[in-house]
Image (cartoon, rainbow, N blue to C red; front, side):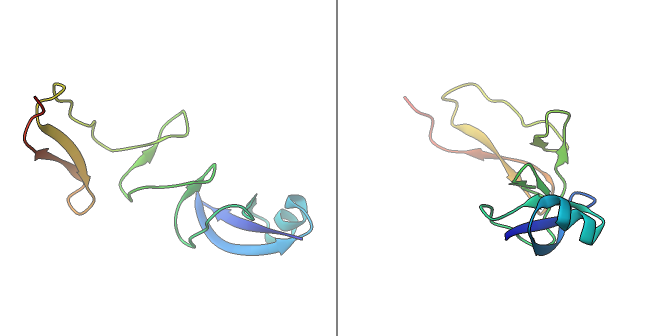
Length: 100
């Protein structure tokens, strides 16, 4: 038997052990994804085995998680880069000594 993640509104809501995906879905009445080789965290959003990185990020048409605002771009070797701040839900500019 295999382990399946039970999905509801793109969220893992439970785990079930069943003979097949069809059996798991028949028992739960919900979409199920085989999870024997995945790390599953109940309550986290799961798409194609990729957990949603931050609560505010959205799924695009290519099934990729993207931030709600575009990442700022900086010139190469400028000594600046952007890092997502999950508490403020925005990009934070980090400055370091520029490379020579």
